[in-house]
View 1 (cartoon, rainbow, N blue to C red):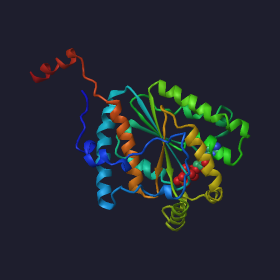
View 2: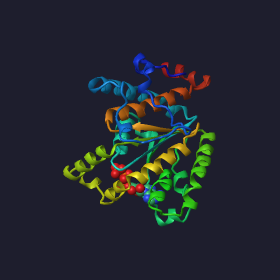
View 3: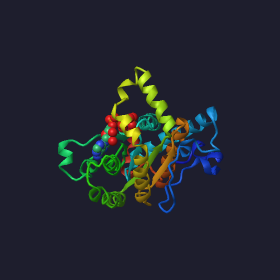
View 4: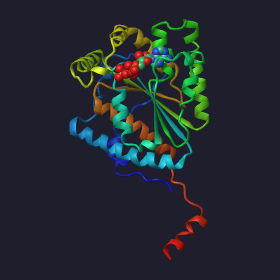
Length: 288
Ligand code: ATP
């Protein structure tokens, strides 16, 4: 049985407003990653109206994920990358808060352990790729191996420069094996990062999130911009597109990410498997 689009999935203003849907990064076009590009796109409604649209998308995600989990024909891998304080945690909380937790697995990638470093860089990643029926969420990912590793020169250029191709090959293999991949770069401006850092330092419930190293990375803003630009352009492929998400405005960010996920799940047409006739025939025994 096909799950039918609800009102939320067929909002005419959602369908027809080109500012409200993200397009994959086009490798042939320049990708400036300026502060202006981090602002919510013009044309998005503000305030309560945007919250209403986000809630409608979240409700739709709840329905789609339930069917996706039961269907088990595909896995969905959602990669979240972004500078410190770009909202990776918040996106996970809001967007995947709409999902049944049994159908989601979240993997965070920190500096690799000695064991992980003794393997190839994709070893730790492949182990946590979601199985069919599941949505896997990567909070940072294998892209750190062409981002922090490149910026901080943790391995020589001749090693990290080959990784774009290696990542594309790996992701292509996953996609040929039923893993649908969506990659989101949560793009914030320098000013927004400053405000988020100040909040982390002044709000006692957020102090724990601040690392002194966050300021070292902030000082390398331009180097990270170049590294992100290369990663997004070299690794935005048909089977594993990158989406640049303007993320200074949280509701807009959550709306844009949820919408791409919903449209992707809708294209997969998830269906609830039907029991065979012999099983359905057992209903009569229960009705006796
Ligand atoms: P936030 O973005 O909210 O500040 P976070 O994702 O930075 O949180 P942390 O635990 O503070 O969470 O940081 C994880 C750190 O691990 C990051 O600085 C990241 O660059 C680093 N890291 C991840 N993968 C690698 C890698 N392959 N090599 C080296 N460092 C890595």
